[in-house]
Length: 246
Image (cartoon, rainbow, N blue to C red; front, side):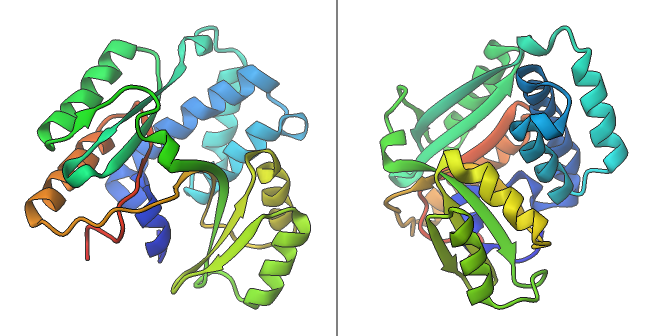
């Protein structure tokens, strides 16, 4: 994915390289299953499924793969075996970390997450130990490379659709919504032909923590890399101030 430095600081993206695409497609495939089971296979009548399809297209998932995933999900008797499990904890230097998973084997997922934290000198905490530092928001990223219009036009379109905030970064625009208004804003932008690099409901840190010690930075990267290796992990959020690649 092209420039999204500010977004990368907020949400550690699994799509960071082509080798991870298979894992991304696995994750989105599971989200399709859950969306279909909750609201049916018709995107016109299932806003959650429309959101997942938009995410799949942003990740360059082929249309045939999306269609097969929906058809398979419509007849998947074991779809309800998947459950959302969220883990919270601290990484090196007191960095707050939230790990969202979608799993059919809680024991396996728990072992993977605990192993990642342990090997990176972090600690799993109790539910709620760091989530109070974050706020759930709809977040839409528009890359400046892909969008040819003006920032003012984009901002007005987003705000008129119900967005709460609009921010401009060096290489992208960020649009924030309430979780309830996310689907409507995303669909309005889609209908307006605005290319979205990423669109999802995310956990946005309200305060950020700097990490200057090189050992701590390497350990945090170790945690994130190990979490990336788990197909069960959907999203990882931190309150890191800055980028580990800097």
